[in-house]
Image (cartoon, rainbow, N blue to C red):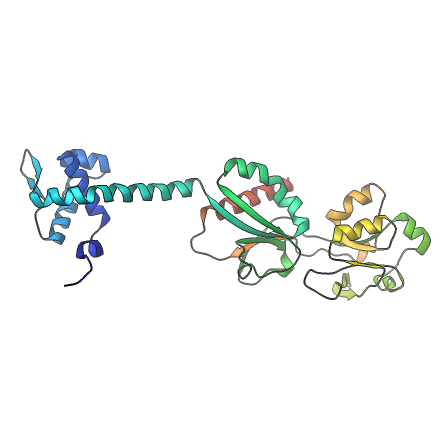
Length: 309
């Protein structure tokens, strides 16, 4: 004899649910109204179940409905299970309506203030059961291998197979120095002049050599290797060193804007500074997205739209 239960392996939950609904009220019309189906459709579902189990479950006539002995035994055994399955499905639907769980995020440091910090409080207020596990790091990690659900990074370093959503305008990096430094060392007239200046280098996390500063001339990009008294993996730290007069730094307009407005830094070589793809939200393509991740993506996009207004 097979150890598997043929009913459990072949039955339709809808048929069992239909049978339990009729058995509880012993009335097809009332049960059909409860389930939101027609009485004839309900009768067909119950008849289909009887054909599967090979025994009559209900006595029917024009006035009455009653359980057979086999029907009563089945009803007593499956009723709790049917209600439990219904409750489980209901709870699953609630999770979709009210997301719960963890979203693991990898985000470039400079993007965090723009797209993450503004949404933290309103996101938690709306989705109290979602935990945002955020790693702030400028290293270009493999999202999937790193165990992340989503990342925010510049467009130049997004893998080809990722879904990418643009969050803001293109970016520009600009060389800057303090008025004090320029008074002592003079102002470079061309990017190649940087070779004779003290420059504050920046190193991508995970890289041994400093990043070469990139400029555009006659529509073509070129890189300049710079040297100086300081190399750091934090651009804001290097920028502060430039404010203190240590040398020339190279950073995004977003970072230098407050210092330029206050007169602490002076932009240099702007005619050679061209825009490049800005920040994107990216994640692996997937057929069925977890509700917490969908809620986070929608919130980031909303935050980005508001920032652009």
